[in-house]
Amino acid sequence: MIEEKKKLVFAAQAQRYAGAKLMCCSSGNLSWRVGDKAFVSGTGTWLSTLEPQEIAVCDIISGQSINNVRPSMESGFHLGILRKRPEVNVVLHFQSEYATVVACLKEKPENFNVTLEVPYHVGEVAVIPYFRPGSPELAEAVITAMKEHNAVLMSNHGQVVCGKDFDEVLERALFFEMACRIIVQSRMNYTVLNEKEVMDLQVHLLDKKS
Image 1: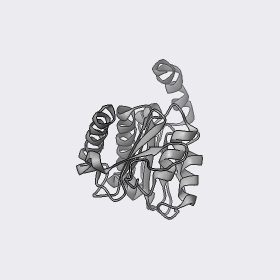
Image 2 (image 1 turned 180 degrees about the vertical axis):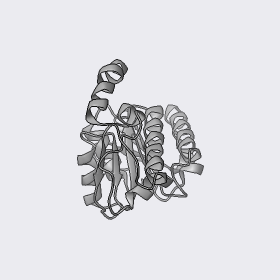
Image 3 (image 1 turned 90 degrees about the vertical axis):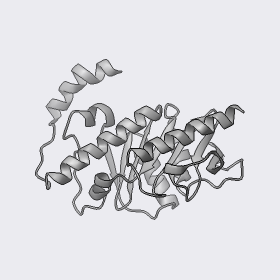
Image 4 (image 1 turned 120 degrees about the vertical axis):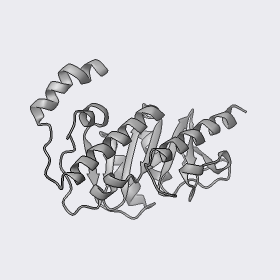
């Protein structure tokens, strides 16, 4: 009964992310740590219409589904992040419009700190090369990048963010999308906060946040 109630929460959050226009059709997937297990959206599902019966319950350590629902093809990096980072409870893979445009640029930004919200909420964004979706190589690259980052841009594919709860993940995804929209709409004629300005934020805002 408790698990079924949590599935309703998970489905509602998945629909919330879709409502924020973070993905199109079946392009996104979501996971949530629940004790020593994880809920993972099922393969081929649309987060906008996710139902409890479409949620895979996976053992975090083995990666195996224990309820006969096949998890997303990207469950490898979802579960890998949850294994490596015990403070992380939610992982979201999404393909928001402007962030995906940036993922497909030939020359990608080295710095996304166009507004204070990026270093404050998102942090440094890791950029990784293209790997086939669902491949072990992609899972390994994302897991490695997420050891020291909370956001990853996957070239010619999409984005991954993680966090302690659903709200933090939504916040990171939306602020990253906002930064990418600024970058794209500026036609690459934008400025970023310099190292001194980010350090000033660290002293006056980030330390207080923690």
